[in-house]
Every structure is written in structure tokens, then in C-alpha cells.
Image (cartoon, rainbow, N blue to C red; front, side, top):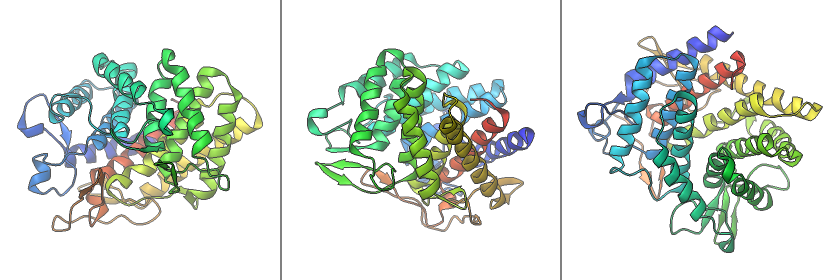
Amino acid sequence: MVEVWANRAASSEAAVTARHLRRLWGLPGTQLGVTAWPAARNQSLFGTWHYWWQAHLLDCLVDAQLRDPQPQRLTRIKRQIRGHHLRNNLRWTNSYYDDMAWLALALERSERLVGVGRPKALRTFTEQFLNSWVPEDGGGIPWRKQDQFFNAPANGPAGIFLARSEDRLRRAQQMADWIEDTLIDPETKLVFDGIKAGSLVRAQYTYCQGVVLGLEVELANRTGDLEHAERVHRLVAAVEQHMTSGGVIRGAGGGDGGLFNAITARYLALVATDLPGSTPADEQARATARTIVLTSAQSAWDYRQTVDGMPLFGPFWDRNAEVPQAATKAAQSVDGAVNASEMPERDLSVQLSGWMLMEVAHTLDAGTA
């Protein structure tokens, strides 16, 4: 099956490349993902661009380079990074700590795994995450600057990033402990979204589970503390019970939600490949995580559409995708979040999710991290 998943990942990459990747404002040496297909004029001109979607596009390009190293893809990775920096007004940072955490993770992987680095950017992000830690206010780091909402979508990926830097391991542990002490549902054992001004926000999203799994796996590897592995065991079981349908990770529609299920898949795959230990509980967690990812990937592939010989994925991996139309309403940004297009399949987020899922399924079948 290794070749099958590699071929599916390559087809998914080709689809996103053909439909979404364009020069930023026609400038040479740049690239970004157009946020919709078919695209309206404002989208084609990158009037909207959605910072954190572009970070996941970079992550997918890194995945693809690991699967099939190619000089032209390294060029795309460099152009993506350059385009992001330029479109963000020649800055790396913005006002949202979750956004910055996703780009920090993608840049760290790009540097470590394929040799395309931005060390200054990584130092900048490290300072952002360290300086925003405010336990005296109830956090955690906040969702965005000047805000009292402390949530898993910011603390999870920022914690993963800091855990991958050996001299920041203590802070990553503190972030994981804050989540454990503050955001775990005593009934389901899932991760709540966050706390706002001292009140629990009880929403439970798939990607919150994913980033906490990623953080705990990193800490289990780096600290040898069995508590982190035990948290992974518990959360994998909770995801299987409460966040899958027929073994398939539940979708969250389009817009920002289009990326939620793939983020969960990415870090379930990390559990399967990187969770240390040889106890029955360790082996069960790895096996369960692997099964969820591969079942989800097979289902997403089975329910895809094919347009011009290339796959088009739906936001829900257990039902048929629909071919989007240009005349439908496009995704809209509302108070820091992006709502879905009328037809979610238009959204770059949804197509990135399908591509990411195929890449991580390949890593499991290939036995690589």
C-alpha cells in the first residue's frame, strides 16, 4: 500500500498546485495559495489570504518533499515562505498567537527536515510565545494579543514548537500541565476549547485534541515522564470514542473548520510513529491512532470527486464531495475566524486537509515519521 498512498498524496499535491498556487501579485520568486477555487477576483488578487491556512500549505509542501524530494518543490517552499512574509507586510508576526504558532511549526519543520530555514523568524516566534505566558491572568498564552481568551488552539501548537527546542522544554511542560489542569472534560476526557475571563468555553473541537496529542507525544519523548504517555493513551481513546464516526474523524465544515480534521490526523499519525514505550497501553494507543488515520484517509479518498483527473475532497470524509461553483457565496472573515463558503469544497482549507491526510497516511504505511 506504500505506493498507493504515495500516489494519492502526489495526486492531491498536484490538485492543490494546479487550482490554488499562484504568484503573489504576479511577483517573481513568490507564491501563495489562493483561498478558493473557483476564485473570485478579490481572492485571485490575494485581497484575502488567511495567514494560518498558508502555514498549513507550507507544512504540506514539507510533507511532500519528504515523500518525494524534488528540486522544484524546494523552490516552491522558498517561494511560499517569501510570499507569506511579503503579504504579511514584511513581518512574521500578527495579532493571533494560534496563527503564529502554526507558521512557527511549519518553518521549524522546513528548516529541520528539508534545510530551508528562517532562524530569525523562529527566534521571533519563540519570544512571542514566551513573553505572552500569563498564569497570573488564568493562562496559558492567549488566543490573540490584548485578549483574555486562553485556549488549546494557541497553547497546543505553541507548546509543540517550544518542546522541539530543548532549552524551552520547561515552558512546554508548563503549557501541557495548564491544559491538563484547566481544559480536560472530566466526563469524556476530551479537551475543551479554552477559558475566557475565567469561564470555561466548553466547545470540543477535533483539532484541539490533535494539538494536545502532539504536545504530549513530544514531551513523552523528551522528558521520559510516563505521565505524558498516559495522557496520550487517555486522549486517543477519547478521540476514538467521541470524535470519529465509523472510524472516520469527524469534519467541521469549511472555512477555518476545514483544517480541523486534518490537524487531528497529523498528530494521531505522530502518536502512531513517535509515541515511545512498549507497554500494552503504548501499543494500543499507537495502533488505534494508526487505524483512525488510515480509515479516515481511505474514506476521504473513496468519497472524493475527480475534476480534470485530479482529486477534490469534501469537508466531511464520510460523505460525497461536491464540485464547487464560482457563483456560490465565498468564505467570510468574522471576528478573527473564517466562516465556510456556501460550498465548503471551494475553500483551500478543505483541499489542504485532504492533501495533508494523504501525506500522513503515506507516512504510516511507509513507516516514516
